[in-house]
Amino acid sequence: RTLDEIRVLLGAAGVNVRALALPQLFTESLRLAPGAALSVFCPNAIWDRFYAILVRAFGLKGALLPAPYGWEGTRTWLRTIAAELGLDDDTDRVFAQATEPQREQWRALTRAGGEHCLAFVTNREVRRFLGDPAQTFGVPLLSVVEELGYRVEIWIEAGSAEYEDWAR
Image (cartoon, rainbow, N blue to C red; front, side, top):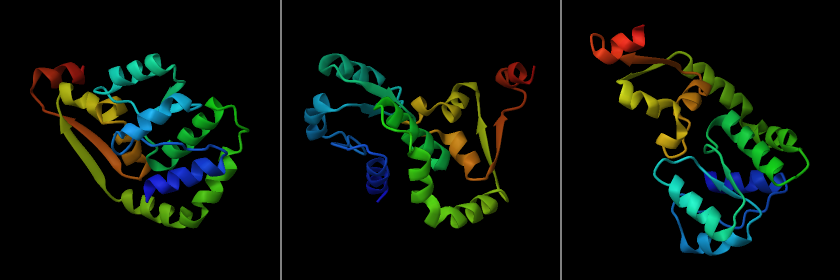
């Protein structure tokens, strides 16, 4: 359902989606890639080298964007793709129109999220995964959780050398 919604949203902004390589990489998507006006890649520490090879091998115009999670992430994604393609910037109207039916439900859910706190217990090595979409397969984890209204706490084990460094 989500991929269909993204296609419709992009189409309303004037973007023709020829192929999707997600949630799985399909050979057909790779075959169509050279004819694309823009290839959008999600940051991914594992796949970044592959993206670079594709861009060089096929002469692709590529944009590296965190996946369109949350309303702000989706709005930014839509704006950036339209701008990269030189389309008229009508994306705010398109986005507002597409999200209007869910706006009140979104507000209610973010208010409900605000009644909860998510605590991430971590160390220095793992902490970087929380804020870097390239480490979480393109998912901007912390920004999405915060946009959903949740309070976020990041805990680092007290007494560890990592905690002592962080606390300074």
